[in-house]
Image (tube, rainbow, N blue to C red; front, top):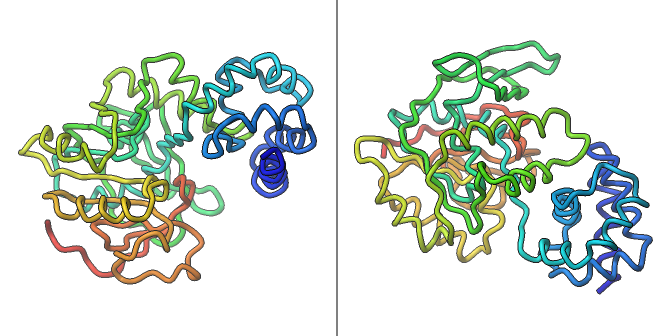
Length: 330
């Protein structure tokens, strides 16, 4: 089992961390060469010992952005707590920047909008109307700036756009809710530390963006249900206001659901009187109109009711509008 840990951490150090977080590359490389630490991590279930999750847990528990020797000493001193926390937690990338490529899709939908997110984590992607947007060109020129109706936000979502900009406007959100297997509370210090710990050291601006978004969510918490979306979706849909357009979003969550349950959930969503917005790898679903050839895409598919709207970075750092067939009204 420790060999599996060695392989996973060596691969992460060589292929995933470089260029994104040199500190995580150092920690992972150290783990790959350290039998004592690998033996501790081998006690964590396989689905809970990914390097970003383990590193985030150690940061949540108090280790600083230190070199490998100091990180190693912390892991040995807190081994039991690290194993327990990793076994109970999961990666929950609650990145509000994902809303940048969703904004023009939301602009196509008649409001007011009741927004429901599956895989909501702390609900940071439920506030598209509370954030500022800056859409920039490859050379950094601001092509379009949008702010909330009451002025610029403390959260500024800057995203690079290729090609022409579609029509965009700030949505009118009158209800926000979500479902998550383990929802997080933006008002809870430990949950805040966990989300901020999931930001890799070296990711410029992301920790500040997440912290500011947590403040917005804490001031006006969304309704969050704990549980499986397949079992609780109808319960939450029934609570949505009838005089608003229900919009269900699944940004980046479907890839974590086994195929049979994933397809059943998609069928369930499409049977509801709701609009559906998603960001997914091209090959994940077979519902795209027009069909998508994975080899022709470098990013994820952004779609409205299965109709392709854009290609985007999974976390929203860049996107390109790719309208195909027009969606029909729901």
